[in-house]
Amino acid sequence: MFVLSNFLQATASVLQLVLTLYMWIVIARALISWVNPDPYNPIVRFLYTATEPLLYRVRRILPFAAGGIDFSPLIVLFAIYFLQGFLVQSLRDLAFSMR
Image (tube, rainbow, N blue to C red):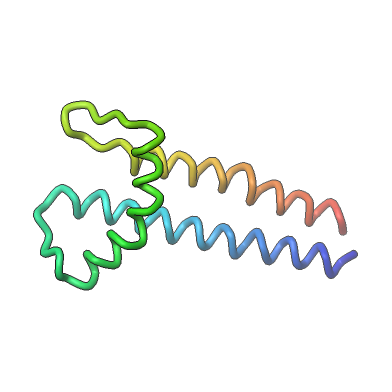
């Protein structure tokens, strides 16, 4: 059982890392949207291609923008925090209970 426990612990750690990295990418996308970035810059293109599929789905489900402010990055950040607190922690607790 310790092998499965270690696998779940490693999965939780990798998921935590991926969610944290994506959180920072969403934050960078939101910050860069406040200025007029060069759309041909490779960093700007990466930020848009990495975040737009998810942000578009959130905008389509919850189509509200108060005064031109897009709240979809905020909703995605809340979802990431929820996944970190619920899913990652549940995987870790399950891994520790199997030892």
